[in-house]
Amino acid sequence: MTIKRIPSGGEFEARVGYCRAVVAGGFVHVAGTVGQGNDVVAQCRSALEIIGGALSEAGAGFSDVVRVTYYLPDRAEFEPCWPILSETFGDNPPAATMIECGLIDPKFRIEIEVTALLPA
Image 1 (spheres, rainbow, N blue to C red):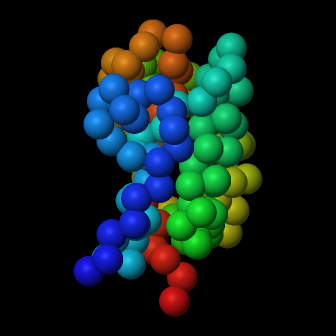
Image 2: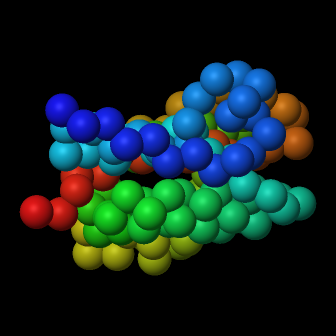
């Protein structure tokens, strides 16, 4: 089985020892991704842009995502993201889980992790 690693060059990759995305076994596994911005909505959009870039580099897109996990330090901040998520996944919604937890830095309000199936 061939494994392809797709780094983003982000500051935490080298410090923590991970890669933005890994393609293996017909799947694209995108690491938990935070975005930039002053609020959860801006960070959600930014994180999805980063994820979209990784998926594209792997040869996939949001319509290929089969699983998504959302991590938020405050579950009350999840609902404002729903329209963005609905727009992003459209007619191809993945299985999803939302977990309330602490993130690596308090400035981050959402972290998103996805798994996609590579198109045949």
